Image (cartoon, rainbow, N blue to C red; front, side):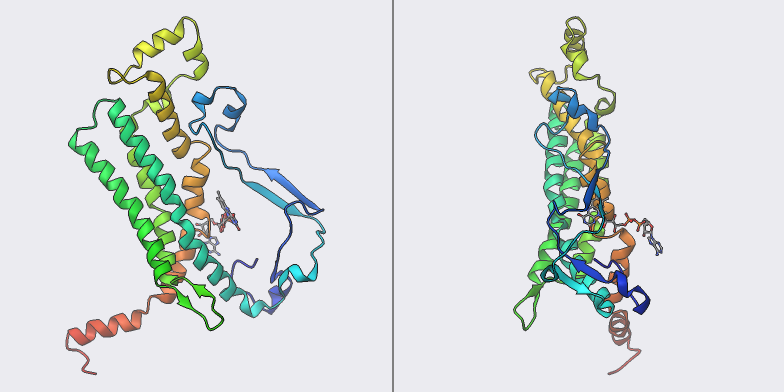
Length: 282
Ligand SMILES: Cc1cc2nc3c(=O)[nH]c(=O)nc-3n(C[C@H](O)[C@H](O)[C@H](O)COP(=O)(O)OP(=O)(O)OC[C@H]3O[C@@H](n4cnc5c(N)ncnc54)[C@H](O)[C@@H]3O)c2cc1C
């Protein structure tokens, strides 16, 4: 679909259509991800996320046939900007999905603080509070955007544009800060820890388990898995979805700032200030 404002010169590119994922003429190029070959090594302890992984692809369309009933825009360039604005309005509020990942990272950081025997330290508690505060701020913007929805005469509802863009702008920043705090609480072992093959080694395994024992009573294997989860979400395969997609998905940060500027009603805000200051009377 169009990704920006268009003119008559762009008419041929003002197209939106729907195709089945296996339509003839489509080629998918799999994206490489950090640490992706760990999935082929046969040790789920080093995966971080022992159950799931996401995958991105580059899609090439070569003469793909699209029936007319699947075409939603065919050269109507004058509607391109409004179409992309409405699409991103929904999409940018839907980034509340990242708060589910944030919940996992808060839980991982809290678990590691326990495993490291420092859960009661005041700075640890404060960092967990900060992580939750940032995460819930994202959720609040998304939910507020939905609550402030406008219903068109057609019956279609659309969420609030300003709050959707503020939501996504926060998403371009807060997961990075949440990740920073998780790495702080995890400790450097999350990137220096030997691999599962060493832990499985007849001689080295028992030595490593003795050296890397944290709080008494917490199995080293649990600590290892949790450290790998933080690595996975902030540096590994799932950082694709938690960090870089948070930055660029539904448009890079500047795209939201443009929409915030368009909707921020600065003249009205100036009038409010001038009225209170006694500069204008009406
Ligand atoms: C993990 C991931 C998943 C994604 N999933 C989807 C998906 O499911 N569906 C989908 O449609 N898209 C998806 N996207 C694509 C996403 O919408 C784009 O990445 C995003 O719009 C930014 O475009 P770009 O990557 O080409 O970066 P660019 O547009 O090249 O941006 C790079 C930098 O250049 C700046 N810039 C760009 N143009 C200008 C300009 N004209 N003037 C000044 N500065 C400029 C930007 O602000 C930014 O700082 C995904 C992206 C990622 C990373």
